[in-house]
Image 1 (tube, rainbow, N blue to C red):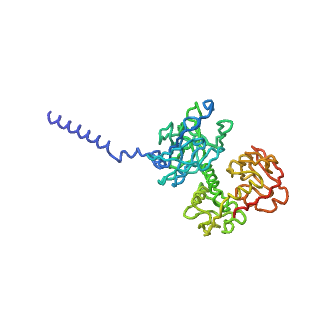
Image 2: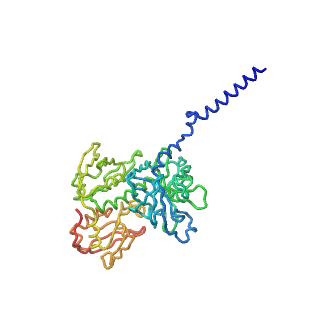
Image 3: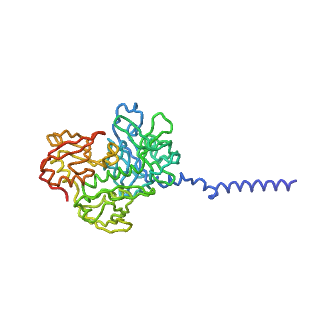
Length: 444
């Protein structure tokens, strides 16, 4: 009987040891390393916390959609370039004083580079020499309803907050106020809270597929994100505004997604521009500029960030399925052109995001938004207003600042009144305008 008791005790002890061994078994613990865990690990170091003091709008509590700027002056950003360039929502940083950026345990300050209130996106530059990994980009053209996603950000100031959900629907139009309407948004039931705005919506491959932007107040599980394809396009346009003030190259590009692979092709080459002189042609696919590989038009703008006028940059393009090596000589930027337009027409313009123009009127590929009108100028006399989008002068489109540089250098624009074409809201207007002579010369 005693022998039986000892044997039973030994079996119990072995069984207990077995349980303890299984608890520490790393193989059995591998089920914890889920796709969500792996995805979050891949993106979390590219997500930064933004905070600062700002004025809160009156009556914000009555707005049917809640945005971070109306809560407590905090939000999220995503690193798009390891040199410290961060994409976020404009409403996150609008009116902020002394913007503080926190990445992990590291805090620094940031400066606003460029923004677009219409699409509610902005780019800031972190003041740091520390390497910050850029977030991996996915694509939003192949998203599927019910696909699993993560929303990452600084919900209510709690950094590195992740919430899980699915894509509830695609292509939503969401009015948040009389002034702000979002188009073509991703709807998700992943929890998006104040502080999440500007942060990434991530797929289970650990790629950003959207920028979190708003949540429906009073509803459960209804949040929205800007699709990444559109967000990247806007980010490229925002950087182009800054680059074009320093540099002139003369190419207009477009990113498409054949077979869901990003490809950037040259759509226009300005006459007598550095690109034209280099031999770049419409239809060329950009492959590399300097040391930067080009997949999206954002890559082109990032490649130009630290270039200066006078540099000759190696450019690799694909043409007729063959790679062609060229040298692109960068010229001085658009500063003189901006001044000439102010003198000759009386307007200060900024390149509008092409998708914004096409939403207003699908006939136009892009345009220049009027930021200022000079009193007593030809533009003022013809009724051109701030907010109008200039889409054409005489026989030329005004899709980009490069177009305007070419137009104001043509003698015919001073010889007779010429037609101008503008969009105001969704209406198109045509008028005649006589330009004034400027003593400046267009940028070369």
